[in-house]
Length: 108
Length: 113
Image (cartoon, rainbow over all chains, first blue to last red; front, side, top):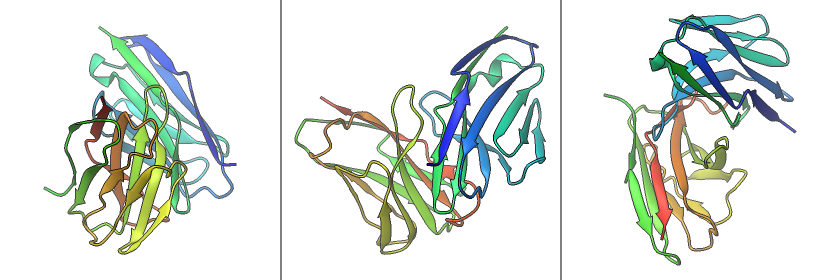
């Protein structure tokens, strides 16, 4: 059964304190691993797509990496405006499966 | 601007009433999706459609219905058969159903009184 598990559920960081969010998955045929940011009461905002193990993508303070079993979202020197819920999802043919998210709170 | 428009943003319903949530996209995407989000849970797929006049059930389709008469539109009806309809509903689209990311609307919050 295809599954996506995110950890931790919640993460509190001080401004400037770097950390990583984890997304582990099991899938019969990966056709993309996606990271989204979701602010309260809003729809998810697309961040990255990763297709193959070893692939990395960066955007400002965020860097996403992918192995055969998991993906990491590294946050370098976070700022309070990075506070949000981060979702990962995988695309298995016609369906997208989402993890339950990591709620990140960055304190000034 | 291209995007996905969901309406209404907030909706209140009495028990026993059907309600329809609107989703319109002007991105010329083939595939459209409806997800439900509950607090502390991931997004769960209700229905999806790859082409006009065709749609498939997702993991939690019971108590919901959809139609896809136009490429741009994918309305979701929450029927009285849905036992716990209070949730945040998200519509999404994708240029290709087999690859590529999802683009989301801003969501509709349904509350049953």
